Image (cartoon, rainbow, N blue to C red):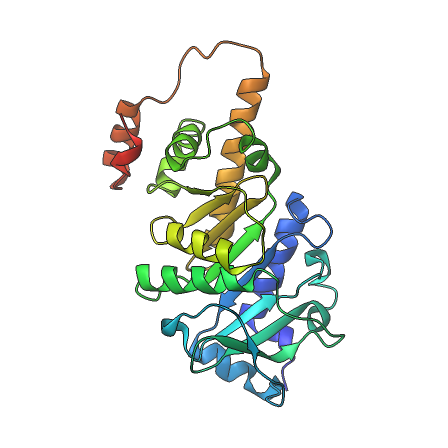
Amino acid sequence: MAGIRDFEVMRSFIRMCNDGWQQGWHERNGGNLTYRLRDSEIAQFEPFFRRDRGWVPMGVTAENLSGAYFIATGSGKFLRNADIAPEDNLCIVEINKAADAWRILWGLEQGGRPTSELPTHFLNHSVRTAATKGQSRVIYHAHTPAVIALTYILPLSARDFTRALWQSATECPVVFPQGVGVVDWMVPGGTEIAKASAELMKLYDAVIWAHHGIFCAGPDFDLSFGLMHTIEKAADIYLRILGSGQRIRQTISDGNLRDLAAAFGITLNEEFLD
């Protein structure tokens, strides 16, 4: 019988954990990742499931995820260890029919729980699933240093962050034409920050947490990681510009942004243009 890491979706999940670690985004046990499984993928994993564990309330509810299954990183686990021992650092969880509790079906064999940010992941999955007619499957959270640094110097508004990022690299408006949302600093891991993030995820597929990091959503691992990578790289460019000590002589103008949108057939969020 095939092993758990023989399945493509598990290999891709583990690779993304390692890619984020290699970028320096997952110090210690920082960051987390979840993936909503397709029916065909659930069937592949079924022989590995144990259904004798109890249900754990989440404190949030999302009816459109009733009975859903997720691969998730573990709370307190190091993403750098996902490739070494996935059975100890990752898990597959099932959501109950009431869509307000989870239980572990596989993984975390040395004990533990799914990521402490599971309520935020769950509500973000719910709103992105609805917004994309079921296409969105990945929610990824990382501690991206350049973006975190920007939350100390830019106003904590979607408009200020979006414009700074759009004007830092030409690809940015193409990759995230709706912009990025921003959540003021809040205690992580609870229902309040989960609800605040989900409200913004109705509008954006990337949400910045002040002084903490980013949440990104997408239909697959490549696009979700690429979105995170693009935002972080643009933030790093912006910081380098500020740190150069030089006067900004030219930038990507609003006219340039509109020309770019026309050339690539995308619709930019006009709220962020003058």
